[in-house]
Length: 433
Image (cartoon, rainbow, N blue to C red; front, top):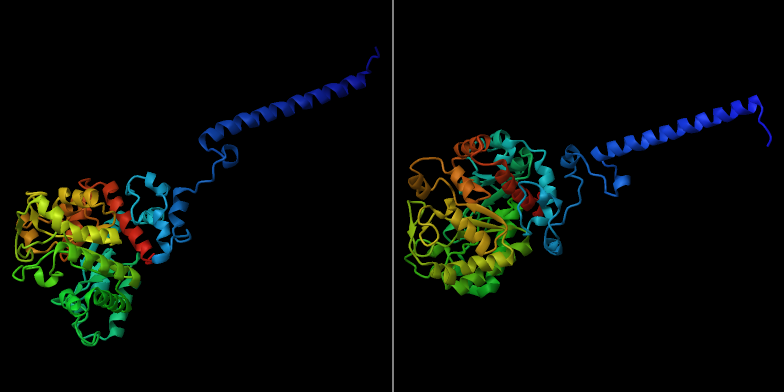
């Protein structure tokens, strides 16, 4: 066997030394990569898609593709709930707004706690200082009464509503009660409408359901042209006795006929692109006026299920996005509290009638609530009962009460987030976001 020279031996040892060093470096890199990967998994190693940080996720809402609103988006309503449903505070349903929960959750991440609390309020629009109130509170919406339109031209109303939206960080719900008949906030102004809208009873008597469709679409077109996006109508209460408080505002016919009216109205609002509200759940019946004081409804559950619930069920199935809850104390559902403050009543609406949209209180300033609470602020009780939106004329007091309750833990942030996500998702579905 040939022997290597000293120089050859030296070269061989140099080569082996380099090989060992390279091997040690490679092993070190693999071990270090495994350790880091266990803490921060790399997508190309794990096969998972990259995940944005929470900050990037919160800022992505504006660029994230969203389902289109309107009839073309009906197929998207069948889409599965997005990954946001796994986050705390996300509504655990696959309801009408679930395709927008992810975008809503992303948008919510950029909001302060104070801004989140404000989203659950629709304030009664003040007679003066309306823009200042938006600057101060950033409420989820305004409810405009007749004085907001009185003496104004259409152009002036449009400028008014535009100023509200321009002052708000999040587009607002702008609504009114334009029921027709005895409750007309907009059409009573001759500068905005040729004549006040007639009651549903009058419209139907003159032209049947076809006239109801035309009348509803005309209402929707007028409100939209003025910058409003929600009507607090149709009235879904069943009343056939002219002596009853709610009769003039109702359809004035049987439960089945009222259900047909409500279904037709909701479909007409949808086709016209305006939001609508079913009221006053669980049904006024032949009871008194909650504007004036506490009202007790002693009818049986069988009566509600076979009569009063039917129009609400028809409206829900037709796609109504919002239900307004009354202040009646309905003994068969909860003999201890007004419906608007009762978790049991909200449970019936959500679980038995299957409603997944926005639940709103009637105005919390009404005497039925004032007398029941003995002057105590009702906002926290109303929110804990299950309402998403509180309709408030005592705007500052109601806001401060709920904000304090979230700060001290009486209302959990998760409960607040659930309603905020649902409200923002509603706004996405309407094309406001």
